[in-house]
Image (cartoon, rainbow, N blue to C red; front, top):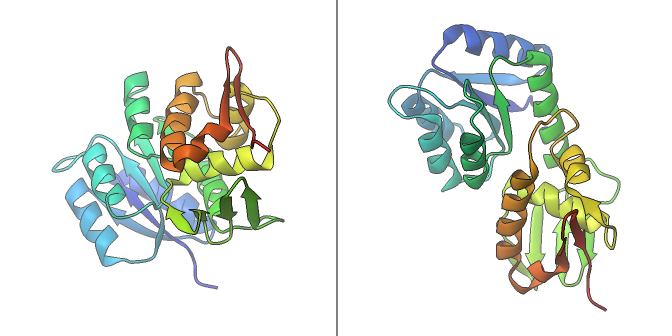
Length: 226
């Protein structure tokens, strides 16, 4: 089986080497770029990149610009690295379709664990590959969602969130529980992260978005009307 390709983008060569060494130990093929412009060149030259690790502060093009450009063509999972811990930056990242957000300094082992968790989900290694509810059909192996036969274009995190909702139909889910389950136990975020994703997910699902009920003061519940 071919090794999965991960693109590591950071203007600090030491940081790229640190991340690369840990990923190579886990049998990933690592591609590198030292600035935003080079990152886009590599991304569009290589058609089968499985995941992008992207620094925010870089010369030529910053991480936000690179993320916007990639997102206009692809829903490949993106992990953003930043030296800032500004909540507004984090929310902007999720608005742009970032899947994970890790502040420097970070543990390379945690970063690799996040990479593996994301790729495990996107590879569709789940016991039940097809979920159906109220006209929504989800193929986890193919990472596709359709409504009435029409494809719905979801980011990786939106897909994960919908998967979690559909697998827990009729169950009231607190924001904390959603964070722990969808963003992993070691993610330190707040309710607005979830609310932002739910808002975008509802919009993309159209009238089916009404299945995601708000439980005021607690969280959400996915419930299909009989």
